[in-house]
Image 1 (cartoon, rainbow, N blue to C red):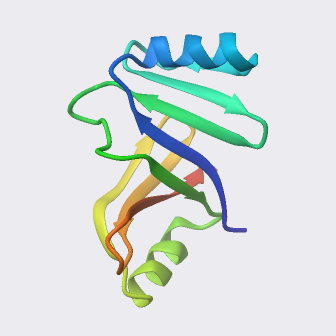
Image 2 (tube, rainbow, N blue to C red):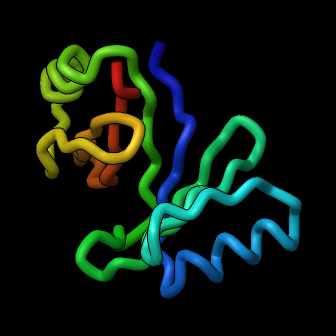
Length: 112
């Protein structure tokens, strides 16, 4: 199963971003410390990153997969370039890649 289920956004205040979406749309907010907040919007989760060292330059679309190793192999075989090696985060592992047109995306897999 490979599907888009997450998008991460740069934010000057992850907490303020979360409060906005909670108030404006009633979406569920889960803070992960002062610099990161998840907002559940139906079948999609929006992440807001305010740590300058981790904040993406542009929105980062993330693809969920069942097998991170297989997904990485497929990304590279199709001409994608891994820009961030796999790393752990609360709930799973992910890597980032740039597709041939220049956009950066990520692939993640839940913890087994």
